[in-house]
Length: 223
Ligand code: 5RP
Image 1 (cartoon, helix red, strand yellow):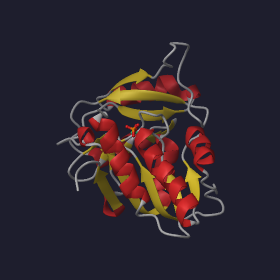
Image 2: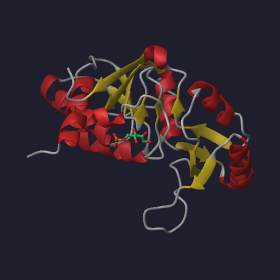
Image 3: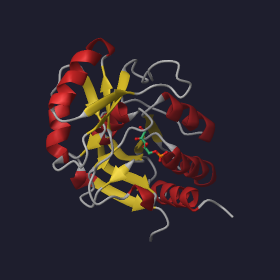
Image 4: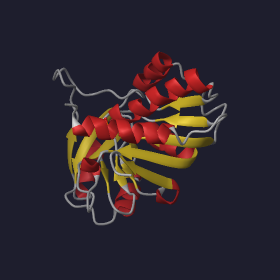
């Protein structure tokens, strides 16, 4: 029997991919759920002759796009995207979210911001009453110590993310470090997002609270 979480991710991904129309420029997020959307887009390119181009949010996504036959473009050529599709780690009832388990949240936020519509694909396990996960934060390596101190002043508990092989810090596709910073229950996600971004040396954080107006959340398995 198939894993219900994987089945839900696949359902969400397929439904998001089916929203894409011919000629669109599509932001391509990172993670297992959005990869199902990309697989379906590749299928539509082959079977329907769908003509799209994607802007990838990570090197991993760019490789998947090549595998699925999705032509790529850049934000330089297309500063405004028709749609962006991405996963999330936590989503609250106000469509605010925490992203970045895959350390791609900096480019993911740039791409989502550039898109007219932001489609978030999740399984129901990502839905929460209030955001409380550790917030991924991309940090300039030079500024790690000072940023950690400022995050503690904000009430956080920053931990440098290490590679799975314990062979040193994770390096983002942009050449930076990632910290995971627990704040407990986040009462005001928009204010915390802005406060973290305001620390010199922080390049971006995984709270997405400023684009709820254009966000559509697709929960796999729930129609
Ligand atoms: C990567 C992300 C992912 O979208 C998020 O971690 C969800 O991943 P998955 O779909 O594999 O559960 O933010 O930086």
